[in-house]
Image (cartoon, rainbow, N blue to C red; front, top):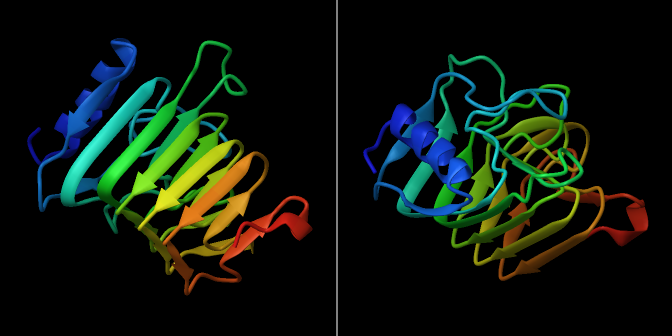
Length: 193
């Protein structure tokens, strides 16, 4: 698909309407989001339309970022039945980096996984901010392989990853340089990393 904010938002909307889909992102492209295209949820809007079906995004050194001058919004929200009974959001990211999300007082500055599932392979989340889970906030299943979560911040806890519930599986994944900590969980004794 073309390297444009509108093309990406339209493709996600189209995939949701079709019950899911595989999106091939432009290689070596930075998709710069200047406004929120997703519904308001978990304390703030999302840059892309909320993921409510199984969607795969495959890139090649591809990045999805919030423009520095844009208002605050997380980059991606994945919704499951806890958000709406008909939602079955499943996001698979391959060689895609998420950056500069800002959920403000909400959760998940880069990715907020609210009852769906998220799988990241050879990608990453960096430079994002939220109250909990500056990089990633997860209520259900998060799996990362050969990826990184770096340089994210949280006002409260889980600068890199905050596991509210469910499982977090990290395989050959670098979670470092996040503030105030790399990982946190509820309850605290089950921190994923």
